[in-house]
Each structure stands twice: as C-alpha cells, then as structure tokens.
Length: 80
Image 1 (cartoon, one colour):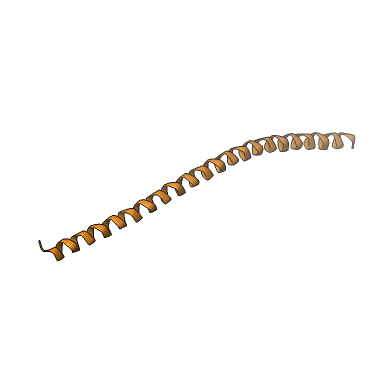
Image 2 (spheres, one colour):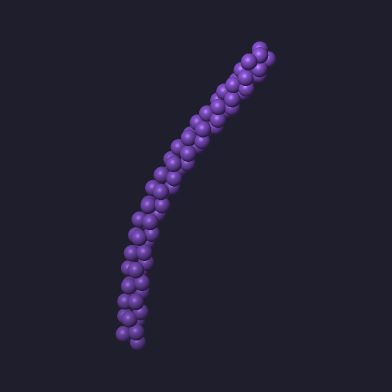
C-alpha cells in the first residue's frame, strides 16, 4: 500500500468517524425528543382521564335535572 493510499484510507476513516459522530448526536436528539413526547403524552392522558371523570359527573347532573324537570311537568299537569 502506497503512502498516498494509506493517507486516503485514513481520511476515509476520519470521515466515517465524523459521520458516526453526527449520527450519534442525531440519535441522542431523537431519544430526548421521544422522552419529551412521552412526557406530554402522559400529561395529556391524565388530563383526558380528568375530563372523563368530569363528563361522568356532568352526565349524572343532567340526568338528575331531567328527572326534576319531568317531575315538575307532571306536577303542573296535575294542577290543571
């Protein structure tokens, strides 16, 4: 192997190492991004569970109000 070939080989290896370094940085960014997405997902999941609980309570309230309304309508018709 000539000196020029060895030099070219060394340059190629350095370029490969730089590409690996860039790839490693991108991989780390990807991991950090996915961790952030996971955290946001967990927060939204908790928020959704809270909203579901609120919805159940509101449905019960609406059911109670409907029942009261029906009762009041029957009372009004009884007086007529």
